[in-house]
Image (cartoon, rainbow, N blue to C red):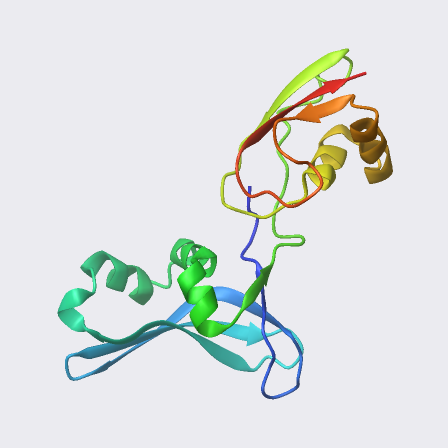
Length: 175
């Protein structure tokens, strides 16, 4: 589950840093019947503000009132939704860094002493995570040990565990 908004990877025009922090603040500007809206992000090095375009020259009547209210209220949930939107990321030429922006809830440690463990992983948000890292943190194992278990086929799944996943999956661990 996410613990905070991800870091935005984009070049700062003031200091050439490549990392921005989103705090969930929006700026909305109206020019007659046309509306512009931006998500504000702050450079982690110099604190300069950059704007990520959310709406550009939209007719006011074509914008859902609920969306506009959430922007006026600086809703952090809306900021998280918009950062995960591929259209917003592509339009603003940004990437996201999810390191240290999520936590793992294992539901307790009573599962660690069993011989065969069937695990179902559910994502609260579409966070791209390496399953090897997730499994290592969940079971308190080094990543190399998880890699060894995959090679020995003691850790099996219907999905490939070596890349990044952002959707739900299951796996079985045999000790």
